Amino acid sequence: MIKLLFLAPLVMCGAWYWYLQQHGWSLKQGRKGFAYIIGFNVAIALSLWGIMLLTQR
Image (cartoon, rainbow, N blue to C red):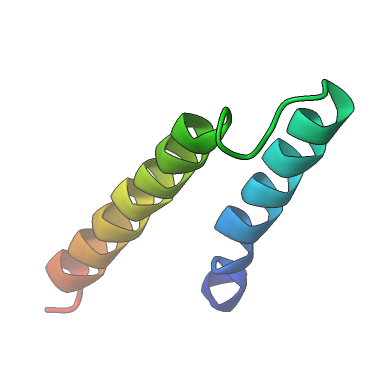
């Protein structure tokens, strides 16, 4: 399951892009949303990495 986690930001960014297109907004207008998506996924990745390090012992 952890092997497929790289798909999460791709799917979320794809959904955000679709949402922007459906509402007639440009990528420049949705730039902040992409930043939030990437930041959220980085936070999840760091959390999982930390948990993995803690439970490795």
